Amino acid sequence: MNGHSAVVGHNPASDTDAPLIYFSSVSENTHKFVRKLGGRMARIPVFTHEETLLARQPFVLVLPTYGGVSGKGAVPRQVVKFLNVEENRTLIRGVIGAGNTNFGETYCLAADVVAAKCSVPVLYRFELMGTSEDVDRVSKGLEKFWTQQWQNQK
Image: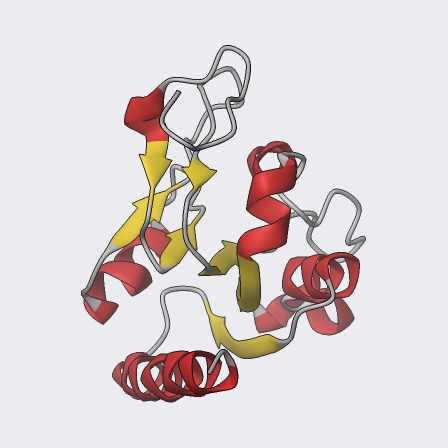
């Protein structure tokens, strides 16, 4: 063994040390936003029948909210599958939510749900694909966040 815990039936090709892990549906809105951030990132597979990622380093999760006004099923099933892997849950450090303000109180609800369940902060919220201002704020915010995380480990 290579010193990593083995996940039964897990393909090592889907391991990632990316500091940013995200889910984007086929609409690609979240994908378009995350690509503008640059840097190392990994995408949770679009289809639940696909092998999920296995995080190997601390990461921030970016995810959209599903369910519209009802909020039912707000956290995408693919993200639930990803976070049901204990190694992934232990390495999450923060959440960034994507949403649609048309849905009122359920705007970025998935980020709130994941943050509460994993005891991590919601670092930012943006609408749909985000604006250039959102990209700038998240880029600077993540840089500051990771610097603080690194300093706290000393």
